[in-house]
Image (tube, rainbow, N blue to C red):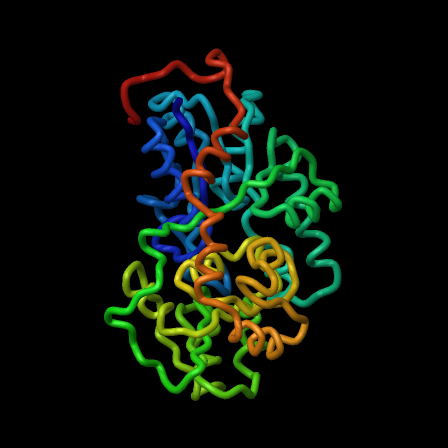
Length: 347
């Protein structure tokens, strides 16, 4: 089968959405499927206002038609609700071509955190509900997120979980950096207001706090919390070595839909400390692979007493081949006569 994925989230962005789509595309190819990704790659882009590291690109209806003619997909999945996602959705609706969509990010909450005006979150959810309205399956990353969207009036919501590369994310002993006196508390991800990092960094706890990642709030937080170690982004083996230097992984976000980095940290042997909200309650087994509490300092103290081996074992439930098979099962086949006539290549 030929699967076309349209996404606004792509390299050089560093986040769980990009990692999920790229890894799943690779797993589908291993299964013998043909996959093409329409993304910002190779296009002129503009930085998102207040978040320039997120690049947005324009995709014309002609661009889509030429790609469809060359690839002749059997399935179309629209992964994001940005300009590329909207352009692909409009193309499909005009031709009555079925498609599935993904709900990866709580943009309404992110928007409300940046523009604290009455009604911002409600209006954003109304727009997203309209975007996903004609989707044959709206894929949410956890059961809790799927239930929340259904309660908000979204239709055809299905759960599409995430995976971990267990060959990469594992407890390392070689080249592990020493960040400071223990216990070492690790955060990894975007350094942005919606991640709730100050709920972690302001805590008066013994040990060393380490932030792995970058983003628009880094300069502000680095100046305000000089005792915290900020490493910038780390990748692959370098990332797992920094993870392995930790005693606990702290996930202070209250807005993530899954929090892939939690499962990756668990695979590296770090119990997770987090709030009992969407994402952590689906990823973390309370009292086994982590501790969830409304008081983050209590969550950290209790998570530090948990077993590294138990955290690793709980992470094994997440696998990318399973995630790819799940996506494939949700896709909706396109009748060939709904597509433009196939040509040899994109002109």
